[in-house]
Amino acid sequence: MIRVDDNGEHQYATVADLPSAPPAHPWTLHLADEAGSFHLLGFDFDDHDGSRAGDVARDVDTLTTWCDQHDVPHLVCASGGGAGRHVWIRLTGPADADRVTDMARALGLLLPTLDIAPLCNAGTGMLRAPSSPHRHGGHSTPLPTGGRDAAEQVAYASRGTSPDVVELLCNWTDSRRPANAYATGAEQQVRTIDYQLRRLDGPHFDLPPKIKALAEARVTTRQDGSRITWRILLAAAHAGWAYSDVLAAADEYPGLIHLTHRRGPNGSRIPRRRPARHIARQWNRALGAAAAYRPSDHQNRPPVDDYLAAALAAVHAHPQLARGTHAAALRVVLYALITTMRSAHTLEVDLSMRRWALLCGSTKSSVCRDVAALIDLGVITRIARGRGTHADTYTLTIIPAQPVPGTQGFPPAASPTLEEAAGMLAHHSQDVFTSDQLGAAAAQVHHALLTDERASVASLATSVGLDERTCQELVARLRAVRLIVPSHLEAVDSEPMYAAAARRLGVYGELRRRERQYRAESAVWAWWCDELVWRGAKGPKPRAAWRVRLGRFPTTEDGRCNWPAAVRRMASRLSWEDATAAGRVRAA
Figure 1 (spheres, rainbow, N blue to C red):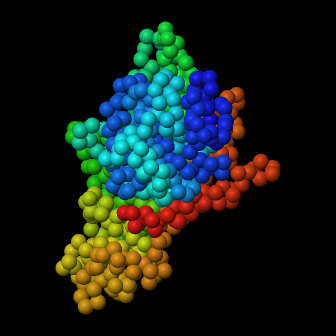
Figure 2 (figure 1 turned 30 degrees about the vertical axis):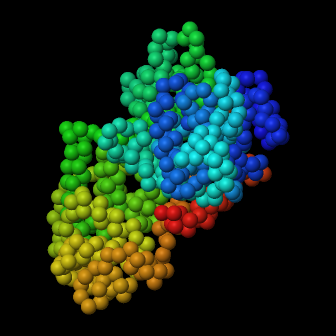
Figure 3 (figure 1 turned 180 degrees about the vertical axis):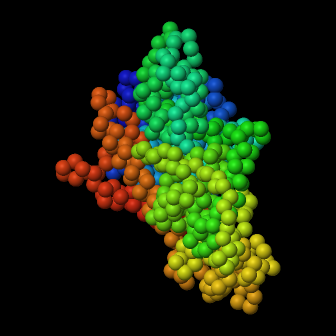
C-alpha cells in the first residue's frame, strides 16, 4: 500500500495499491506493516530552510560510512531540488517498533539534521519513495554511492539486510554518546544524559526567575521566537527537566510558542503540522548543549569537590560507618551518591532507589534500608520528595568529628580520595560481589588488595575497617572462588575470572537481570503517570510522551490500571533485546 498527495497539500490522504507505474503526484511508502513491525528504515535528513546543506552532507556521510563499514546495503536519494537526502535500508525480516524508536532517538542526538518522526510511529511513519516527485519540484532521485552508479546502488540496496541492523545501530550510538553532536571543537559531554527520561543527571528545580518571566510573556511580532525558545529550553535542560516536562510546558507557556507554531507572513503564527516532532528535535539539541557545558576553573566544580572530599573524610571518621561489614555496605551507598554529585557538579541530586541500587551493585530494597539508616545518622538529608517520575532529592551533610571508641578491637577504615571512592564503587559492578557469600565487604577487601600488592591480612583489615578474623574469612572465600591466588596473598583481576567466580556462586548475569527489571518498572511507572495526566486533562489532551509511544495504559474492565499486563508488555520489549544480545556481541 502507498499514500498519494493528490492535492499538493502534503497530506497524503489517498491510499492505493502499489501501481505498475509510479504516480504523477508525490507518494510515500509506509515503513511498517499493519502489525506495527518495520520492514523499511527510512532516514530523512532535512534542509527545509536551505541553510544546512553542509550539516546534511556530514550527517549522511556519517551514516553511510557506517553502513559501508558493516556491509549494510543502503540507498541514498536526493529528496528533491534542495540538499535534503533520504537514506533507505530494506530489512529482510520484521523489526520491533519500540527498538526502532530507541534507535531513531539515539541517532537524532548524533545526527542533528535527521527527522526521526517517521521512525518513531509505526502507524503513520512513511517517507516519499525513490522516484516520487516533490511538491515543490524535482524528484526523489537515487544517487551513486560507494563507487556504484545509481542503478547498481538500487540493485545493491534491494538485497536487504537482517533486522539485527537496528540493534547494531543502537550499539553504535551507545558507543558514540560521550561525544556531543551539538558541541564544537573538542567539547565533550561532561554531564550524563538519562536517555530514558531524556534529562540530565542532577536535581529537578524551577526555572530561574528571569527565564520563567521570559516563558510566561507573550512573544511579540518583533521578537525572535526561536531565540527565546532556545534560551528557555537550555535553562530547562540545566534545571533537570525531562522531555515530559517540556511537552507540558509547550502548552502552558506562551514564550514557547515557537515549538508549536512557525512564523508566517507579517509576523503571524501558523500552527505546525507535527509539533511533537519539532519539540523532540529542539529538546535533543538543548540536552546535548547542556551536557557539553564545561564550567571554568573558578566556577562551582572545585567547591563541590572540596565539600565532597571533606564529607567523605567525615564519613570514614564516623564510628558507625568506619567499622564492620554493614558499615562497608553503607559506605558503598555513600560512594554512589558522592560520585553522582561530582558528575553533576552539584550537592543536590535526584536519585531513585532503582538507579541508586544499580550504581552500588545492590538491590533496591537493600539500598532503601541503607538510605533510611544514613538519614537517621544525619549523613544524608532528603530535601524534597519526588513527584511523578521525578525521584527524591538528596544532599550530603558533613558530620562533626566524633571520638572513635577503641573497644571494638580494630581501627576505622582508611578514608579514600574522591577518585579512589569512584574506583571502589566501579569495582562493585561485578556479578560475583552480589553473592551473599561475598558482598560489599569482600569487594572492598579485593579492591584494597589490588591497589596494594604487598598488603597483609592485618593491613587489609585496617584498610577496610574489619577485624582480622572477619578479614581472614573473606580472604578465604575470595580464594575459594579463585579471585585470590591460592599460594599467596595476591588478587586476581580478570574479567573471565570474575565471570567464572559468578557462575560458581550462581549469580552470573544478576546485575544485568536487575537492570532489565528496574528499567521496565521505571518505564511502566512513567507510562502510568502519563496516563493519569492524560485522563485528568480538561479540554485538549496534553502530549504525554509515554502514552504517545506505547498507547493507552492497560486497564481492567472497571478502568483501573492493569499493572501486570503493562509489565508484561514492557518485558516483551526487553525480551527482544535479549534475543539479539548474541548478535550484538558478535558485531562488537
